[in-house]
Length: 168
Image 1 (spheres, one colour):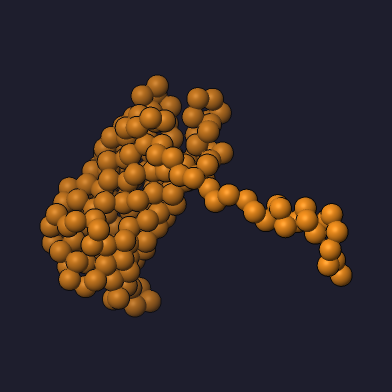
Image 2 (cartoon, helix red, strand yellow):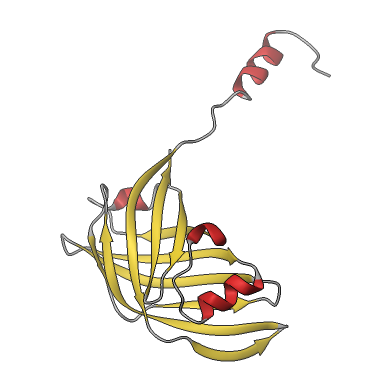
């Protein structure tokens, strides 16, 4: 058993890693169509929300969200919504980047009802976080494959804003 000595000091020093920082990479404004209800599965209300377009802007990426993707959602009775969005971005240089973004949105029943009605709801009244992953070809956008991201979502009546942060 290791109780002292240089190796223990080295292990203790290695454990003192600074927490990662977050740096805003870009914001995705995703335009969405009317939700398509899919019924209940395992006690959850399932629905599909079509992605009809949008825009990407920010210091590390700019482009257009392509129509044809969607967000597959599982709505729990307790206010939890699991989101699984899949769509593509055409960067301003023409590169196609695929996105898979999974996360959760939680809200009180009252706030969830407001969101369902399409009301403008202050984002401080709900929790909406996700973990976007990107598939991009080698080259100018290859960094997207080699970086871990977290995102904060804001649900608006006609779109969803996703503020994407690189974990440094």
